[in-house]
Amino acid sequence: MSNESNAYWTVRSYPDGEISAANFELLAAPVPEPGQGEVLVKTTHLVVSPPLRMALGTGGIAGKPLPLGSLMRGSGQGRVVASKHADFKEGDLVAGPFGWQQYAVTDGKQPIPLQKVKPFGDLPVTANLHVMGSGGATAFIGLFDYGKPSAGDTVVVSAAAGNVGSIVCQLAKLAGCRVVGIAGSEEKCRWLTGSLGVDGAINYKSEKVSDALGRHCPDGVDVYFDNVGGKTLDAVLDRINFGARVVLCGATSQYEGDSQWYGPSKYFNLVYKQATMQGFYIFNFQSRFPQIFARLQALIEEGKLTYAEDQMQGVGSLPDALVKVLSGANFGTQLVNLDV
Ligand SMILES: NC(=O)c1ccc[n+]([C@@H]2O[C@H](COP(=O)([O-])OP(=O)(O)OC[C@H]3O[C@@H](n4cnc5c(N)ncnc54)[C@H](OP(=O)(O)O)[C@@H]3O)[C@@H](O)[C@H]2O)c1
Image (cartoon, rainbow, N blue to C red; front, side, top):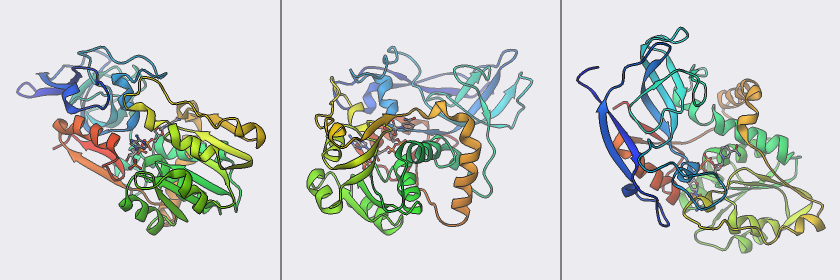
């Protein structure tokens, strides 16, 4: 270990508006040694997802930004390369909040427990970072517990080609719903209708969502799975049916540099339509993950559920990966492979 160094990214500055790679600084230090009760993990893959933007502040409601000079946060998988911990041995594949760095020392408890990773059947182990991880569970719980879809319902999904959104779209189709996805490119819209079997797709960057919803949802919207918030939420609220369920999962359109979060002006439609709008947080549902993953694995093995991964290579690409995700230039869950 002695000749190697640990490359890591810190927060150099807070963005004024959109984030850029210049908001981060790449530093290096000797690879740390684990103390008694600790393990040293060599990171293999990190997930780069929209809420990471909030680590650098949004002026919004989602907590304080990381102090300048802090290690950038991030979660993923890695391999134990040295262990002084009774529960982990060298070679174990583990998942945890390692931060944007090549090596991490952890006691396995803080800030959240280190978990051993086992692949699901023949799926690549990186599937545990999306469809067989919190993304898949979020889609499942959000759709079924909160969206409560019935066959024949019209379900609208935003960020529909993303990690969570693409799984929601497919589960809603399997539940017999009419599904309309909202995404940010023609390529993503083609994937939704062509490969995922979605009934209609709206490119919110090239057409007005409210007009397109009128065309795609002539009978209104029964379930809206909201990943983006903002004006798209308003456009859907304007079209909800009696008894509709609006599921608040994320607000990606608000993460990037808004000093004030956009509040929905059409919320009063919930009153006329006796509809509900409810948020949920997936980490309160962990006890159900094994059951959900068994179901998702079976669907994948039966060829009824698919997913997309977008991988960038090397620790150096982490800031660019976050910029990419927040511009929508990624296709599938954005991972960075550090094991290169
Ligand atoms: N409630 C929970 O417990 C929970 C758990 C997990 C995730 N979430 C939330 O769920 C949402 C989806 O998460 P994910 O991991 O599946 O991410 P994701 O949808 O895969 O994120 C990437 C996509 O977000 C879209 N996007 C980026 N900037 C946008 C903007 N300004 N407006 C609209 N769309 C934008 C882009 O797609 P386009 O090209 O289509 O714009 C991009 O490809 C996030 O808001 C996340 O915070 C919540």
